[in-house]
Image 1 (cartoon, rainbow, N blue to C red):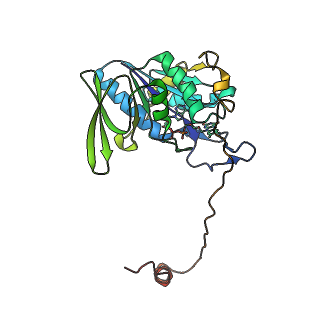
Image 2: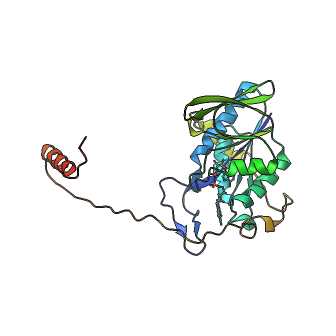
Image 3: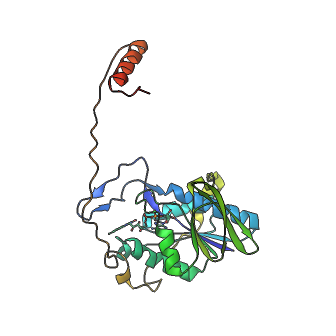
Length: 262
Ligand SMILES: Cc1cc2nc3c(=O)[nH]c(=O)nc-3n(C[C@H](O)[C@H](O)[C@H](O)COP(=O)(O)OP(=O)(O)OC[C@H]3O[C@@H](n4cnc5c(N)ncnc54)[C@H](O)[C@@H]3O)c2cc1C
């Protein structure tokens, strides 16, 4: 069984998101980390392989060479291979251009199962899994919980508004794993040390035999015309005094604004 987990490196949660005014793109040169939702996809893949007792789990990403750090984390967590497609010509890829690259890499690798996180923390599209499945003409589901293999097919629990449903898919298939599917493991010290020595496979668009005109800005028909940060009206009141007086003050403050009315 060969499982591919698509992972994205995103600006670290604590760092402020900054938009480059010239390109209207998110600046990604600050602190970055593995998209937290991808840890759930990786965990589900690792559990499947552990249940099978053998197999390969490759983590793959499209991003700048710095994104290798997130792939190393995947290796530390148990991925058997890590592949990074890094090419200047792919910078500025929109959804469809991103699928051109990932789709080509997945065609080359021929995994039995392709896992995605439920969304990327930075762009929140939650759509890439479906666009890749469409390009590869594979069956796909989203919001998958626990995954299981039975009679060569994949079974997945999905949470719905009214309860849960059990879905079965033939392989190969594409699955977006829900944040609620599992509690991802942490890398062990041994795993982290070994991951540093393991090779990280990097490939360019040319190595994938991909026309650069299909990716990056040239291959993206979506144009971001404007971006703005919502203006929140914030007011602040500072009160100094002992705890009991402060509590009285907060109570009066909330009552005056109708916040305590039932
Ligand atoms: C004009 C334009 C320019 C853009 N330029 C850039 C850019 O330069 N850099 C950039 O990162 N984004 C760029 N984007 C956003 C880019 O289109 C999205 O990152 C991409 O479509 C994936 O969508 P998402 O990030 O919302 O991921 P979602 O659809 O929310 O992602 C779900 C899952 O897909 C997987 N995934 C997402 N991205 C990757 C990836 N790169 N490699 C492997 N797996 C992945 C992960 O498993 C993730 O959990 C641009 C968008 C537009 C419209």
